[in-house]
Image (spheres, one colour):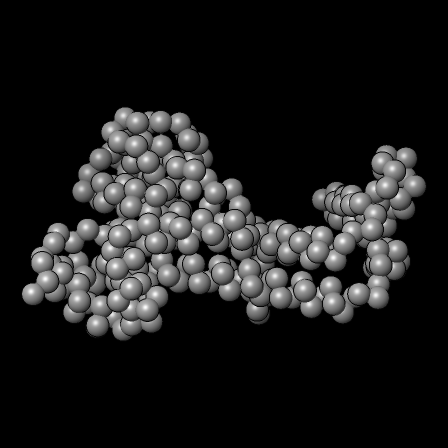
Length: 256
């Protein structure tokens, strides 16, 4: 018979944990502060059963480090917060946080990376000393964490695949022909040639005029295919963020 153990697991999924640690980072960055202050940054009145559970969860994911008055946002959390959704650095940091809780590593092993059924996982957790309610909560946090990593990973793969396809289709075009296309764009957009007075030698600049003002993009001449792919990935992620901030619905193939 398996040895019983206390049910140690994150009380919340990784998505909520990231949202919570973001509130702390926006207030105190990576400064060392008391746990009570961190709880207040997250919206709690102070240390209580609920806030202590969330603080514990953030520690299990590796998003907070230290003890008592020496607690701070970790470098792993900063790696997640500093990069937009879909960037490989953020995805790698999310994967690291998702496997930080010992219980989640055990569940991955028992379920072949999350492919096992919830009833099977619950039965195993109960043999490990979890009461049914705790087992349900642990599985819920585990599933939410897996979902976040999978969604962001799929989003990056889709953007990367689309960018590669665009590059291959446009292999016969160079930046000069792309500039011509910009020059023929609808009213409200214009291309500024590379002999503009404020454009350094060897650089080109595209200017897009919007109601709110101009958007300028300055880029080196002769970009490689790899650089075009990287730029396309970045611009797609940036535009996805701008669409969310403007209140526009996501595209049909876009993950939120």
